[in-house]
Image (cartoon, rainbow, N blue to C red; front, side, top):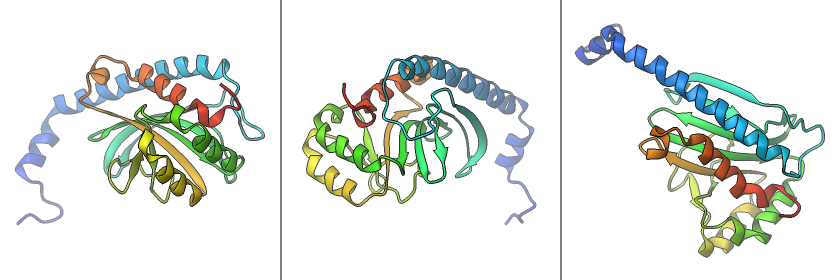
Amino acid sequence: MTTPSQFTDEETSLLADQSFFRAKAQIMAKMRHSLSATHALLNDEVSSTALVTPPGFNQAACQFVKGEHLESFPYQYLDFPKYFHDSNVFTFRTLFWWGHHVVCALLLEGEGIKQHKARIVDRFHQLAGQGLELSLAPTLWEWKRGEGYTLPITHDRKAQIAAVLAERSFLKIVRFLPLTDPRVQSGQVPEFSRETFRAILPIVTRSL
């Protein structure tokens, strides 16, 4: 039995494997490049769309973040558009999460939340069937997918989605892309993010 300060054979092999760390650094650089390209595409979308935004919203605000410990896994993300102020949130996040997936998420809280929820119900069939899911988590910062975590927005779930929305003080609409999907390898995450942003527009625009 190993002690907390001892390494297993597998751990020692990884620790000594320089190629692993070089590959990780290269992957992280490619993720950053992909997120920069995502920002460029989304900037065109935001500039040409009349979004329903909270007071003080800055259309140009964005943030690139990377870290190592999202439930023990490395990650990188782009927030654009980005608005966090007091209890108000109006943000679209594109997240690479190692070992899990790429996820695009619309995060809404505070100002205008009742109107956003109403538009989901009123325009439900414009949103349904596009791979979008409603987060069921008790926080905006949960990124897992599946039963108990997300509810697919499909045409047959309008009443169920409406019932869930009625009980929530914030909204998180997500769309996932497995890391094994060919679009990840071929560098199409920016296009996936733009497609997702276009799909959620019925929630955050007065008219289409």
